[in-house]
Length: 86
Image (cartoon, rainbow, N blue to C red; front, top):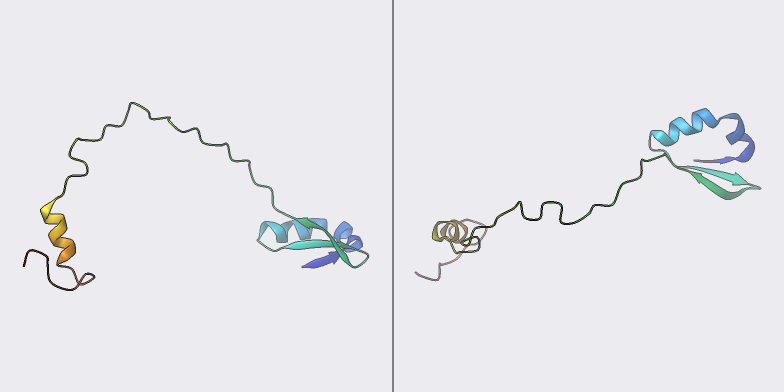
């Protein structure tokens, strides 16, 4: 929605509500876009990597092949065709 400066001054509460509901509001000056109203969002604090360092243990067989899982994938309809060992 585009509104001129005079409308924005007299309808600020309504325009703010529309913005909070997801509407885009652009305020124009002399018929040209001048500013865009946006809803306030709390700043997101950057995440610091390594917060769980030393607390997570991955087993030595984590990436070992599992014949049951391989068979389930090879026998499913998403991967039609013969298995390599047939």
